Amino acid sequence: MNKGMSEIVKNISKIVSPFIIIFGISIIFYGHLTPGGGFPGGVIIAASFVLLLLAYGREKVLSKLSLYKSDILHDIGAIMFLSVALIGFSGGIFFLNFFDKGKLFSLWSGGNLLFSNIAIGLKIGTSLFLGITLLSMIRIVYKKNKIEFYEKEEDIK
Amino acid sequence: MVINIGFHIFLLLMMVIGAGIAIFSKKLISSLVSLGTVGMLLSIYFLILGAPDIAITQLVVEVLTLIILLSAITGRDVTADMTSSKIYGFFLFFIFIISIITIFSYSYFIFPEFGNSNMRVGKEYLYLAPSKLKAANAVTAIVLDFRGYDTIGEATVIFTAIIGVMVLLRKKGKKDE
Image (spheres, rainbow over the protein chains, first blue to last red):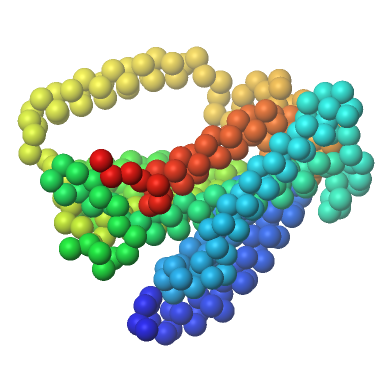
């Protein structure tokens, strides 16, 4: 099995990718205190999976996080962000921030900003992962004014 | 942080030169590399102007975009088609550039001074974010709380785009004619 890149790249990416995930999670969770937030953190988490995808090929990545699971996580992120907005109706207004605001510069501060950041990070990370994995799975070939889809590279002549 | 005005002009000129190379180079791989240069310089420029949130986002999204574009053009013999009528194209190009420069230099005199806008709404947000909302990062407070409608629209756009990709790139259920 000689899929993917060389051994050095494989080992380095295996060591580095958990740290990239932890860095993305810290950027999401401290989004209301330091620069960053849900969007860059989610993209960083997706980038660690893309690193594994480039180094090992897609079978290894899909064994860690399958397409079905990432689709479910994507929907959970979208529904969570919408429900954070809809919970404000219990105070009367859409998007009302009625949680306990906490102290400035502590982790629990800003009310629902933390939940919104987590929801957006989940949604953006899994959606970018889905997009790049789907683009890598299927090859589109033009043949005599006809478009054909292939799932494996061996089928292309 | 005060930075010499020459450094601003240097960074902007390098970005313009990189964009020009990306448009006019014959090989796609070299235009892709210069496109990456433009993105990285834009990230540095955001950092100098004092917007680290946008700098992080620009850097990370630029890297992922380069990976997608690079995987799209490798292994294919694609070259840019530069043969079609050059003189007509350059004529249109110069008309476009001259009209844009005229309009922008006219509207330059109406703008507020660089970095000193009359921020009536922004002052209110900068005062409310630490005092009422207790959020240290004012950008996140604006994006997710004061302007939450915009963020929900943005999330809807990305959701729709991913659903479209998943529907278009499926193998099962595609009927033959």
